[in-house]
Length: 361
Image (cartoon, rainbow, N blue to C red):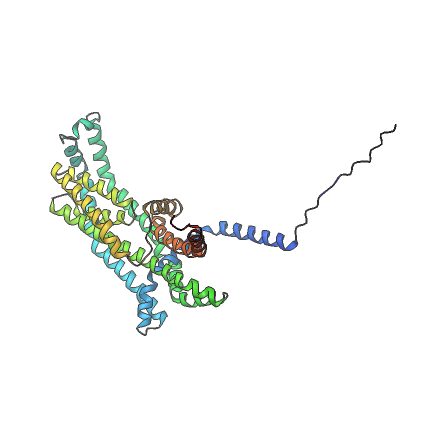
């Protein structure tokens, strides 16, 4: 008996990829490569966009009064830079004098901390003579180092906010914001525009409130710290006020760092002064979190503490301190957009839950 089996056939599957799909993939890959190559410019555009959106409500208020949008944008920008220049002129000279004096008195402050009855056991292992020598050397070098640090900080500030490119990009975005919005919505259906235009307006309000409100709250925090430091005789209250105001610009994290610095400065005077500064900072933080923030951000979308901290961490890793400041406005915009995008599905799911609920259950 012949056991003849038919020869096996090898089945091969052919995957046919349309040319259009290949072109789309190639175009997407090219866009990603271009974005990576231009990431510096794109980050600058993001910062400029946040700044222009933050100033947009002020421009809109002037436009509603009959001003041309271009003139209103230029006036708002001129007022902003004029205010910054005025603050620099008023603060820099006394601040620099206090920094130099602080550097000269560093060894004395260390001795006061070392002689403190509470801190002495913690510092007993440190060689006071070595620390004295190091601080004396540091005191001689701090003015030059401070000058270098201020120069670097000025360069960083200029590269982000004062460089002509970034300034003009922000200004042009502010002038053209309404025209760009109309142009983009021109590609959508009327129903889509009716749904998303209020979301855009809400996002602009969130960015403006987050930026302007953050600056206002930081000014209040710096004023409270400076007045308290002056009242309790802490050294260099102006320096402490500026440090507190700048740190308070960083949401959630900056206020804690500022409180630690103020308490340490209080220890150079006395333990009661340090305790008083700690109490003042704790009370102020409660007022800031429960009164000032709701008052300033009452028209915006609130963010949870976890969302704020995560946004700040991502912002710091991408853009440093500036990233920490713009991260919260961007997170607020993202929350507004995601909430609106998910609203139809959430409504459908809610209807299903209500339909599946049994009577009496």
